[in-house]
Image (cartoon, rainbow, N blue to C red; front, side, top):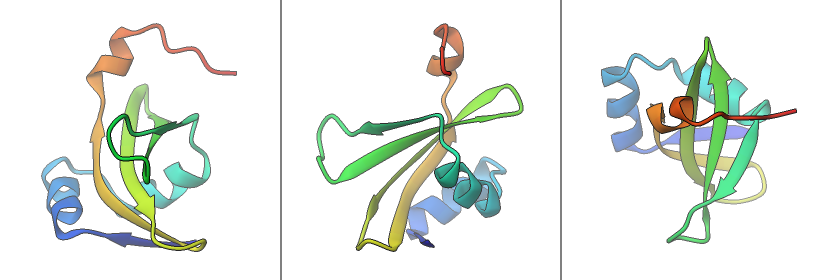
Length: 85
């Protein structure tokens, strides 16, 4: 899979000290994949990383190319009793 980043995503990853390598690994091993509530082509991957939950937001440009729009540690998920198998 090819991972591309918007300019916004690269800025936010830098500000939030999120490694782009973690994004690729996260997409491949996500706990959960959710559809965006507003934009049907946008997906949210939820990844557990060091006791926190990383949300990766993006969309597939084609079958092999994923465009990352943003990523952040989602504190709302930590407050929930997130359950996964």
